[in-house]
Length: 516
Image (cartoon, rainbow, N blue to C red):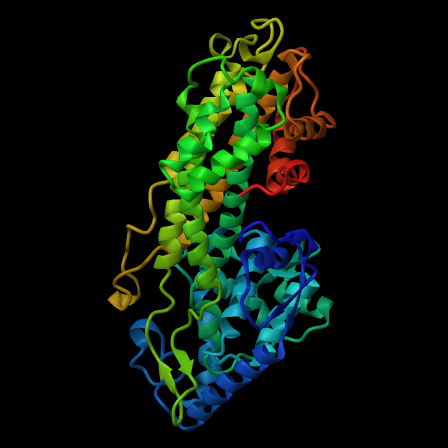
């Protein structure tokens, strides 16, 4: 189940069986080393031998002994197969703009390794060993991120470095691919039959970016429970709306577990107990936390099921089917990105729903007529703006998120001379989801900043819950209580890092046990 594995404690991952999203994050984000299992090696070698055998027999196989896409009827001679694979990498390296992040490129290489390791792709083990070394030695190819419909171009830029072309980062320094290989003590490879196609095709990039994003969205949904509960506490809300009897008559699992999270967070709160009967019911942004957060979590967890299936699949075309008298190269379209794309489009909507509730809760905190505290949570409002403007920041971020929540996958622009007359656009769904979760984290961080400031106005005779206190104590180490206007920007970033790193969740779970 998500969140049970501490990604920071995974130092090594052995490819060869199922990979979880936590193991994936440990490699892509935190630099865990990668090794190949004996089963992995055996599967790769077996499928490669078939490709070599069929090539020697002059079989007609898409992308191996033929051209690509609309050129699939053009037969390529045996002595030109290596040039064909090099050409596909060179010609497909056409994405533009800013580069993918280091973790996104690492994630993509990991997904290529995982894809080939299923044993249905036919790439050589030595080529996969190069990508494994890239991950373990910190060689990160430069890959522009704009201009992909689902695969091909960013993946091709990554593959350039294998053949000593393109550019790569080592220790943050960008250099030519050839120089990067020399510094690492590696030699460029000459791609063999099918390998160029394996390296650029499939859902590896879409899945890689989507998995990174989804991990952060799921973490943010837990953080939203924590921050929402603290807002409820400091606004003297009633916990009656979170009663399990109420949840039981509408038994959505994620709604019920979210309500349980809030009850656990406030179980030992003197503030929550004292104000339980303070008002009949709170505004929707507070009493609907189980319902909205729960619905969003369900969408994200449904997406996780899809992502983890995709992470453990073969998304190549053609696939090398090793069974039967002599096996078979089977053309189809497992490279289609619809599964991941639709889920990431849905995840964008779910994350935006969490963000819009956070912004409304924050508005209640800074509005003196609603909170009962000084306007904008500052002494001498008027002379001081306090936390007035961070809510503007939330409004701007939320507007962006709403725009980005328009689905990418409903669009389709034909490519490849109408051989690809339908295009899934899953890459753009994952790419915009990266922007969405970044903005969600900042919106939640701003709410948390207001929560921290609001607690100074609480009655000192009533103690907050132990989970709230742990969070407040952590924040107090780096963020000052505002007595007058200060430069706020760095403190928003500090709190965003507290969320993104998982430290916020860790602090709370150390006090009250695991949140769901």
